[in-house]
Image (cartoon, rainbow, N blue to C red; front, top):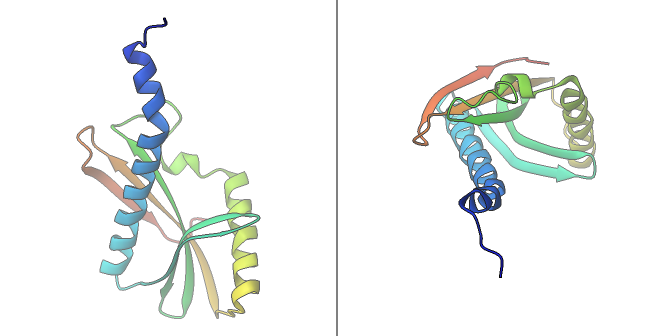
Length: 135
């Protein structure tokens, strides 16, 4: 009979923790946008090319917000902002085009923002950065 080590338990719960952290970051980002007067149009819009975390309006602009998060100051894989790579930007733009085509939206302006949420070790928000027109 194999014994389960405590490190095995941590490994098994990581995906759940990662998903919970992502959901909490998206919720914090949506609340931030609403406090700033944005209208939330959609959350987690998916199609074959990918997912758009948040779609919002800011005046006459349609805003596609990519949300990234990090926990407890973990920078092993870079900061939350650094996680938005050129490849990710291209994927978000491609997915946004599918969204515009499928919904037949024709906004006068479209903007791609990044919202980076860093959580303290206790789970509370340590920092939230909103970069307008990030890419």
